[in-house]
Amino acid sequence: MKYVGVREDGRKVQSEIDAENIKDAKKLLKRQGIRVVKITEPSSLDMDLGDIFVQAGLVKPFGQAELMRFTRQLSILINAGVPIMECLEILYKQEKNKAFQSIIKKVASQVESGKTLYEALSYSGQFNKLYCSLIKAGESAGILDTILNKISEFLEKNEKLKKKVKGALTYPTIVVFVGIVVIFALMTFVVPQFVGMLKETGQELPWVTKTVIDISQFFQDYTFHLIVFIGVGSFFFFKTIKSKNGKPGWDRFAMKSPLFGELIIKSNLASFTRTLATMLSAGVPIIDSLEICIDTIDNTKIAKDLTGVRKAVTEGKSLTEPLRRIPYFPPIVTQMMKVGESTGKTDEMMLRVSNVFDEEVEDAIDNMTKLIEPIILVVLGGIICFVLVAMYLPMFMSAGGADSG
Image (cartoon, rainbow, N blue to C red):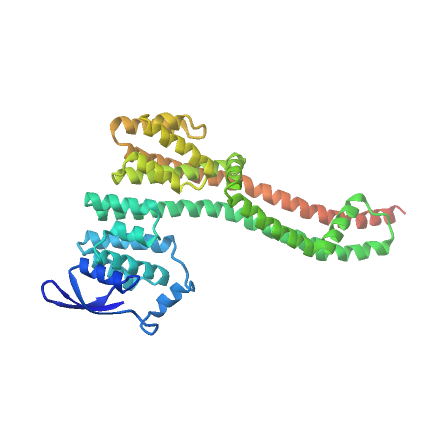
């Protein structure tokens, strides 16, 4: 809402403020030392078109790319000595994503009303606990630009890791999908063409050919039912593995799976160690750091094990001791962390550990890709070959019988 006021030194000020109502706006302005002369709520004509779209939920929500760019640029501006309000105004004007632009505007309004950047970010409800805690630590220590730089590096490395894992899972998924479509097309359109020709010969068909024809007929008769079944089954499957009761079981199964288990474990541990290294280097106490790290872990089994680690540390034990009891936590890593604790450089050693896990994740992706590609190709190729042989076998048998006759 727009207002006209007078500062304590007598200067007239005319601007806008973000508040729920006029009463709250007056309170905020009073805290800033501004005596309100006139204040008006915005009409629909005064509202920015982008704000209308944001409120209606018609614009694309912001993602990691916007958050990383905002963090990096805010770090550069603060390091250059630009006041925080000017930083937010600059970033607001150049932001292209309307949803994130609206959030920056709200944050700027809260900072202008006298709140710290940490309080403003927390108030917006759009920044996670990890991000806000690091900002709070940076403001308390007077090293906000350094912390923002650490956050941007952390976000970039985490996003890079996620893309690697996602890319590793995307390729086999696409190959399997294409293979299924090809097999479905063979069964639905190609095999029926052979059936007509084979019936004309009147010869006895081998069991292989009969099996393929029966499967083809099943596909033709129940295609719609299959699509509905697969669609409904997939919906309930994904709903179950994301539910409170179903997710723990799925996470345990995923960790033990022969192809993806190693990748899931190491990618989660890479994220954990990097988060913990970032938190400790920012001066956040280890208990609080562990709590926030646990919140960032998606796998419930790993999160539960790390909750036990946090409990042990709270009771006065070292970080290395409870981690050593986790069976999937590599011994060499716990040794590295023990060295870090003994030298008082746990954060530096954690960062090295996260880099080790990054390398192991890349190795796991390479090994998985090398193993899964030939398996998929052999299985799909075998199915297609089986269908083609089943269709051509009667013709070969017929030709052989004619030659012998």
